[in-house]
Length: 150
Image (cartoon, rainbow, N blue to C red; front, side):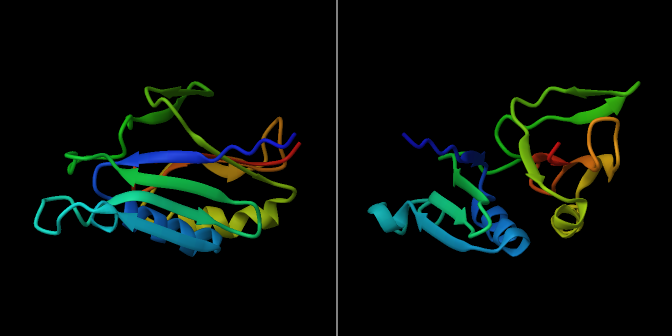
């Protein structure tokens, strides 16, 4: 039996921009279907928002996203803040997206692209448990925990 999990992010109107951004960072195929594509009349507010979005890349990266109906302002649903304090991570966010690879070199380009407009929580660098670890909250409010596989 094979099981695959895919992170599904819930946005407040930014799903298309976020998914296009993640495709630019990780490559792969982008699928975006709007509420209008599934029958919502074009004149109804929100018909152009994403009801199903997916980025799937050959390198194994997969993320889904949609726009929660009626929510149009603010960061990702469930977003909050994350910071490092006294060597620990303090957050009120429900979920982080974890990204890992075998080498720091593999991660560096993804980190650099995600870091544009982001809040760096912990710079990507060697740590006590990994040849590379870092955290950032991207411009869409998604916090990424990035590390070299142990």
